[in-house]
Image (spheres, rainbow, N blue to C red):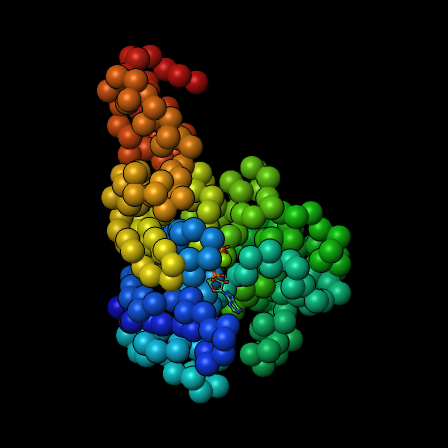
Length: 286
Ligand SMILES: Nc1ncnc2c1ncn2[C@@H]1O[C@H](COP(=O)(O)OP(=O)(O)OP(=O)(O)O)[C@@H](O)[C@H]1O
Ligand SMILES: [Mg+2]
């Protein structure tokens, strides 16, 4: 087991009239290099779950594992975990607090006690990794950037620690379609070329579904499904009953199939759909 949980339960405000069991005996694991999605209705526990994976929340009962070891609660263990399991919050730019892009990204490596020369290397590498121009951006105020650039700076500030696991909460919220495509192609590159394990919570499947090896479904704090993306997205009715949809392109394939056309419905991206429809028509759709 690379990273995961065993019977993880989390109760917010325990022992008060507001006690809320947000996670109930959640057990799952991911292998190194896996690209996984967590989906589930609003309030199903997605954000609560991922905050346990880098030690921001403590289990009420059950365990969190990383590299086969139970994550403890002492400072040194948590420090080590947060270095290796990077978490990008939803709308991370709302948490920016530095005067320059450089300082924003430098915060985490400085916190690790690196010398400034090493911090500088980490900052530059992280910015290059997310495809941002270092020369012009480093001294800009983070709030002077576009939404897409801010999101990339937030990602760079986590990558500056060179984590092995990257967890993102609704990473495309508020981005336009080119920002969404750019972010997902970056995450795919990090996953494939660096073997970074990627775990994403999202309600938006259009860009993410085709990339995922594994999909985890939560409902009312319980893990109710986990499997290969093809297997999970073949459960159309069950997902509907949960208030979850399919990627738009998969819906179209279902529509064509129901209309009598012999097409596969396990298609999650436009390129797959184009190929499938081309086969059907014996001609090329551009
Ligand atoms: N800080 C908190 N204190 C108390 N209850 C909380 C807190 N954060 C979340 N909850 C509750 O825990 C449950 C799970 O919330 P969580 O934010 O994990 O859901 P989610 O699946 O991420 O939802 P969304 O899709 O809306 O982001 C909800 O009932 C929520 O109200
Ligand atoms: Mg959430």
